[in-house]
Image (cartoon, rainbow, N blue to C red; front, side):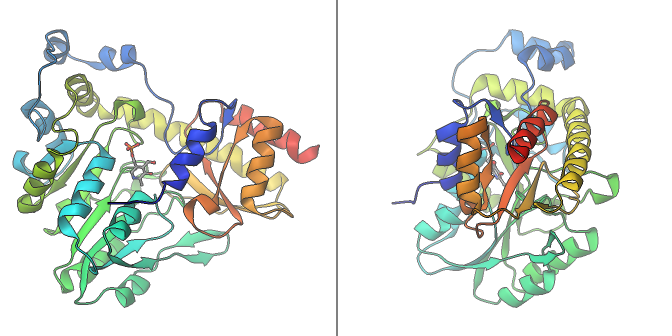
Length: 370
Ligand SMILES: Cc1ncc(COP(=O)(O)O)c(C=O)c1O
């Protein structure tokens, strides 16, 4: 299969490890190994100390799947399969889709969510947000208009990267009703699950409320463990999950043994990982609101409800890509333009999950005033 380059990841590859500041990352600062092990109880420490680097169960070891199912209400151990998020997405699309299948995918989106499907020859209709002032809103009526009896798969991502949108529970129910009407499979990328800026914005995982939903979650975003390269899919559709594991034999075959233990520790003590991230995101967002207020002629931002990112409108005389290129060259700040999301040229993604956010904003402000 030939596939187009992953534009956003290629842009990161160009600057992420060579430039001084990042202001668009969707992950939070990574926790240290020391921090993870400090949370562990005796039993978990013994797993770590006795770890052997043989092959692991391709579905995920028992202790890991136990820790994963505790994150859901109605999922049992046969209904989760551990793998990297990108691998899950790639395998799922390959086993579910054939040429000319019709699918609906949220947009803007993390490119792999639609690119693998497109490369397989699927016809994609995009569920786009409506603009609400400077904010973004995904209207379920729009989704309803896109889905019909030919829709093989619906792909969504809430909390949403990049807009920070999350539906209410009522809207979530509406999404499930739309999918249920035609028994359509729903692939729900929940990489930012639980990162909600108020407790009332928390919604259940789709796999807990719809039997045809496959939910994806992992360590990179909510848990601040992007370098762990770990995730899983959960679903009542064990037929699909088993096919995914079978496909995985052509990819990683099984998970890395150290990651399984460390992921288990993080899952068993999830508040120690997720809560500090939420606090950091909220603190940085408040700082950003003041920044936008000082530059309201140049920037458009509406408060986000969830996730670690926002899509912010630029009102400069340049398109977003050129603006970001100039910014990184003159200040060392890497900022992601909306061109990387194939979503016009007047927005940038801002990420709130990094400790040095205020410092980087200060450098950006110097550039604005120069
Ligand atoms: C919506 C979404 N899905 C999946 C991923 C991939 O996650 P990971 O870095 O764990 O592969 C990302 C990463 O940015 C993402 O934003």
